[in-house]
Length: 110
Image (cartoon, rainbow, N blue to C red; front, side, top):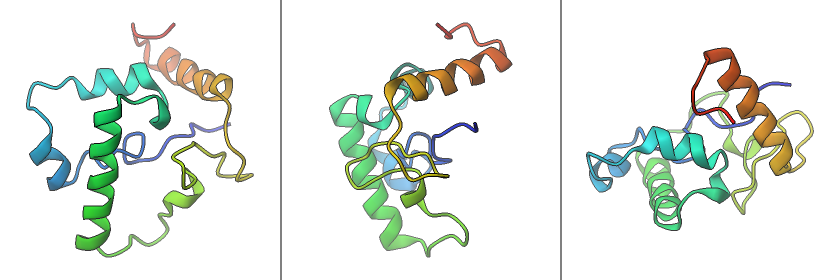
């Protein structure tokens, strides 16, 4: 099984100028993403910023060939298994993160 999270950092669109302009410089984003592990578990304000950054990106950037966030997230922000289209359970998401963190030797792993 491959890691089921988008290349946009839990669907946050953190790399967009919109997101970067609205997040405090000292905000520990990578730690929050690691702790949350799922878009729906993000703090509400970060989730709201992410949704606004996504709308901004869709207005300002052409669609990227071969990238479809519909294969990673449903309309409610739940993570999907890109192979089956089914929503992932918290247990499945946590197992993916645990596997990824153990490969990296991450001290944040549970």
